[in-house]
Length: 331
Image 1 (cartoon, rainbow, N blue to C red):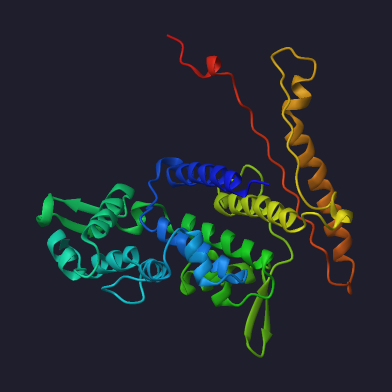
Image 2 (tube, rainbow, N blue to C red):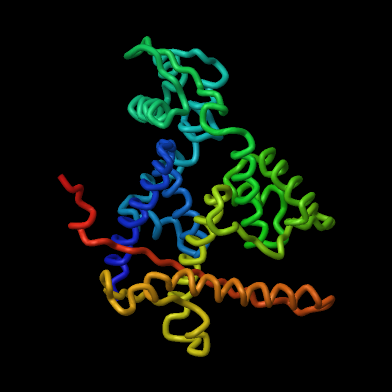
């Protein structure tokens, strides 16, 4: 087994995936905090698996003191305690707009000026912030939310992501869902109010507080709304299936056909006797699985009492890679 080879390949593909998401639909999503976020999340997962900080530091190729400094830098700004540089700078611009480069650099004098300047450039390139002028006299102003998308579209996207997390993590609290969804508590609460009112999410009062759950999650195929949650759901399913398969290495043979995935490639061409069947395979499988899911849901609704279920998660994916000659523009 060569995990380093696999890690390198997965990181490369993940970067391609993030780049595609960051530019989807012509939008330029800010990426200034991605490196810090990757470091934070990876560190937390390694700690959760029982690794000591000294071991984690060695895995990153750092001394323990360097690791502690890197961890602190990733967690918060040296100037504005409790916030990352990305969050702190954006908040400062929002509160003081219009504000100049000189004012921003002075306010964040304890942070690396190159990092602060990089964050500002990322804000401008992503369209989050408008800039007028150049150099230290340049003035920044935060773009209005209406400049990105209408409130209805944003609210619907939030609802789908919260709904997904309530389905994947039944019994979650408001704060749990906000953290998992990457939304503010206020935005998560607004989404939950609509979801509970629509009967998509159930709320159960417990001594520790309200817990939220969902019996199902669905984004109709082809819809323009909720695609963010649909992509996240598919990605989580793939990652969880592979992760579980890795954790079962060498054991649990009885689950071989219940956990994991398979990939096939088939070469067909125009006029090939199996062209239509192969190219239509995703639609065929999607229809079969949807019919089965509906039968399961119908039966479950008739059961007033039932044991704790085994949730079976199935993902399907297919893409068509055309020959380079067909992708080239004809003169």
